[in-house]
Image 1: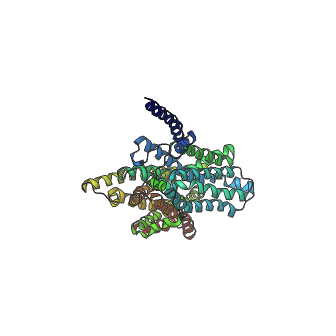
Image 2 (image 1 turned 135 degrees about the horizontal axis):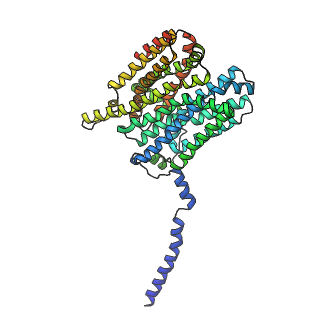
Length: 449
């Protein structure tokens, strides 16, 4: 009896000792909040997200992808005001555009590599915070050097989604539905250059040029806060990253993404879409000069004339995304479930888009050269926008299909070619100048070849 009582008392004392120990093993509130901050959803498999959750992520990425183009063009109507206030030369004002374009071309490779190594969520949050700081400093700039430097900082921060967005969509959307998602992701960057000057002109007229950058700060902050609370970590390498925390890490090489060019299918696809964008941006470069000088339209009306092409690109993106998914699903069904990325390519709509773009640009060149009614040219650009985006969305989705885990790196290479053509377009204009029809025929031959 006494032995039993002693053992019972010992067990009671052990249980009292184990209770505080078990309480100590429970995670603290701060640790729980930190884990919640790292991954708000807590689901390790992004492809198993519900449709609502996937669409919320798509909305955040799509809106974020449009911020960089809007930030690039929103201050165009206020360029003369900024130049007058800072007593800047034309060279310095052009440098504000060049530094933004250069940063947007190069830094998506850095962000893509960081996102694939350390996780996309943290990379988004850091980059958007940098963009907010850059635009705040632009709004508060007191001289031209300060404005110029922080234009580059803002471009660096806002460029992350230009590459990582495709990687995020590749993480959460399966191949049979990825075309539609890529269409929504691609549309805002093409709407941005058209909407930016319209919004910027209204803000500049009402509140001054600094309001343009406060508007960008507000929009970027809203997306940044939404990502903090609703964007989970979608990278499929998250598990391996967690397991390698205690291992020796090599410094990430952002230019490792350039190794994608060793694959012929990727290199050819990027070059072809680069030619498509070269034609698109060549027209954009001389569009304002043509419609303001040749047709005598004022600044506001000229800005509104960008909308038909922007509307065409959105329609073309939707059509191209839906068609590529339909094409892929039909080919998979014919192959009894076996799939490969090339099943997305081809089809009558795909090739019709290329032909439509060529014809629309040639007719647009003739309309400008013949000085016909300016509305005919806008109608041509509407159809040119449709023809541009049908093959562009299809090929962009195809590249993500080929390298699903490295979709951000593939798209980063794509962005480099995209921005390089933005510089090349000005050289084409200076060389061909008023020979608009010859320019269009040249671009037509490039696309066909």
